[in-house]
Amino acid sequence: MKNTATNFLLSIAAALLIVLSSGSIAAAFSSNTKLGDGALASVTTGTSDTALGANALNADTTGVRDTATGNAALVRNTISNDNTANGFGSLFSNTGGNENTATGSRALYSNSTGSDNTATGVIALYHNTTGIDNTATGVLALLDNTTGSNNTATGFSALNDNTTGSYNTASGVQALFGNGTGNLNTASGYQSLFSNAEGSNNTASGYQSLFSNSGGSDNTATGSGALARNTTGLQNTAIGRSALFNNTSGQANLGVGYQAGLNLTTGNNNIDIGNVGMAAEASTIRLGTQGTQTATYIAGITGSALTGSDVVISSAGRLGVVASSARYKKDISTMGASTDGLMKLRPVTFRYKDDPQAIKQYGLVAEEVEKVYPELVVHDDAGKVQSVRYSMLTSMLLNVVKKQQAELLEQKASMQKQMAELAKERVANQRQATQIAEVKAQLKASRELQLATRTAFEERLSKIELVMAAKDGSRNLAAAFNR
Image (cartoon, rainbow, N blue to C red; front, side, top):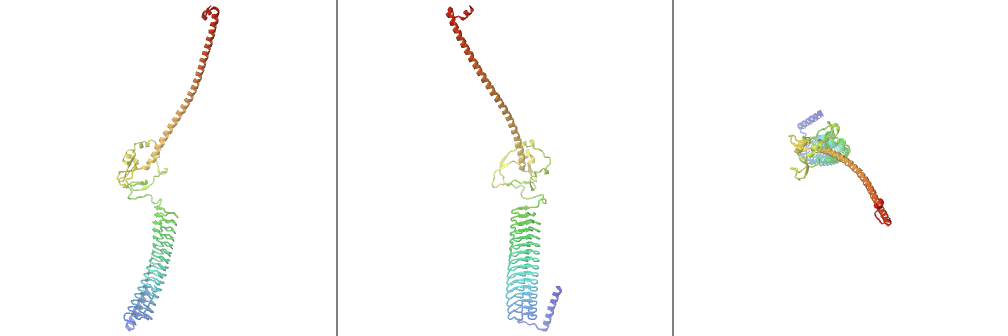
C-alpha cells in the first residue's frame, strides 16, 4: 500500500516536470490546473479548480475552488464549489453539493447535492445523495447513507447501513453497523450498537455494547458486552463489563459493576449494584453480593438523630441484623432473675433537640440505663454513651411477663384449692344445719308430747280428786293416799 502511494506521487511529480518543461498545461483560465485526459474538459467560467487524473472534474463548467485527484474524481460536478476529491471515482456523482471532502476510492461516490460531508476511506459514504454534514472515516463507513445528516462514523463499516438516521456518532469497526433510521445515537467500540435499526438516543461504549439493540431507545451502556442482548428495552443504564447483559425488553434498569444485573431479562425498574440480580424481577434494589460483601459501612449515619424504623448499627457505621440462631451463640442460659432490674429503669417522654417538628418520643435515658444494665448501652468511637439497645428489651420484658404469668398461675391454683376447701366446709355446715334443724324439731315434738302428757295427767288427777271428795268430803289426794 505504501509502495503504491509512493509510486503514485512519483508519477505525478514526473508528469508535472514533463508538463512544465514542455509548456503543455491546458487551462480555460490561468487559475485552473489540470492534468490527465478529459480533466476539466467542460470548464467555462470556473476558476481556482485543480484536476489531476483522467476525467477528473470532467463535467465542471462554473464550479470554483474544486480539487479532484484521481481517475473520474468529481467527474459529474458542474457548478458545485469548494469540493475536494482524492481517489478513483470519489465524489463521482456530485452535481450541486458544496464543501465536500472525499478521500479514497469511490468515497462519496453517489453524492449529488449533499454538502459539508467528509469521507475518508474506500467507498466511505458511497450512497450518500443529499445528506449533509456527515463525516465518515474508514472503509465502508456510512456506506448506505442517503439523506441522513450530521452523522460521524469512524472505523471499518461504521454506520454501514445508515440511510436516513441523523446526528449519530459511531467510532469503531462496525459500530452502529445496522442503523437505518435511528437518530442521536453514540457508539464507541467494536460492533457497539451493531444491530440498531431505529432506536434513538442510545449511548454505547465498549466491545459489542448494546450489540443486539434494534428499537430500544434512551439506553446507556458502558463496558464490554454491556446491555449486549437488549433489543427493545428503554431507558436502561449499564456500567461495567457484561452489565445487564441478558436484558432484552426490560426498562428503566440500572446495573453498575462487573456483570451487574446479568440475570435480568424482562424486569423493569431494578437497581443492581455489584449484584447479578434475578430474572424477570421488578422494582427491586440489590446492593452487593451475599457472601462476597460481609460488612457495610456508610458515613453520615452515626450521631444523626432521626425518627423512623429501628435499625441495628454499630458505632463504626456498620449495619446488620441481630442473629438469633443457636449456631451464632454460646453460654446460653435462662434469664431467670437477671431481669429484676428492669423495674429500676425510668421510662420517659422527650423530644430530640435537632428535630424541627419536635415530635414527642418515648424511651429511656442511656446514662440511667448504663447504671443498671451497662450491656444495654451503645457507645460512640470516643467512648461516650450514645444509645440504648432497645431490641434487647423485648426478650427481657418477655422474661418478666413469663415470671409474672407463672406467679399468677400459682396464685390461681392456690385460690382454687382454698375455694374447694371452702366448698367442702359449706357442704359440711349445710349438713350440720340440717341435723340441728332435725334435732330442734325432735325436741319441740318431745316437749309438746310431754306437755300434752302432763296436761292429761293433771286433768285425770283433777277428776280423781273430785271423785274422792264426793266420797268422804276430802279433796286432799295425798291424805287419801296416806290413809
